[in-house]
Image (cartoon, rainbow, N blue to C red; front, side, top):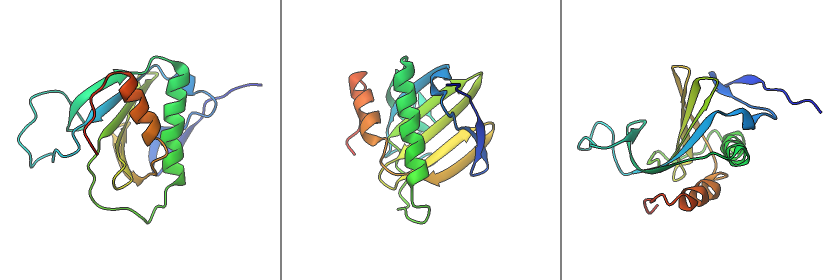
Length: 151
C-alpha cells in the first residue's frame, strides 16, 4: 500500500493534513502553559513563552508513533467540533509545535472553551475543538515530567 502526503487548506490556513505520513514530522514539542496569563494585560513574563503565554514546561516528542497519535488527536478534535458552540474564556494550558520540511505549525489549545489558535505560514486561524486530545496531551506531559497548572 502506498502512502502519500497531501496538504489541505483548512479554514483558509495551509495546515498539514498529513494523510498517512504523520511520521514525516521532523520535530514536535508539547508545552504546558500558564493559561491564567493575559497577554498585554499581565506583567511581562521574564521566561520562555509560547505564542505569548508563559511556558511552565515542555517536552520533545521523539517517537514517530507518539507524534502521529498527538497530531491525529488534535486534528480529530478540530474536525469533530461544533463550530457554533464555545465559551469565550480562552485560557490555553496546552501548546503543540511541529516542524516538517522547515515549516512550523503551532496549536495553542484551550480545553475550557474548546478553542484552538493555529499559527503557520505567516497566517493565523482560531477554530473550535473538542477535548479529544486532552487526555493524551496531559499523559504525555506527565510522562515527560512537565509541571501542569491545575485546570
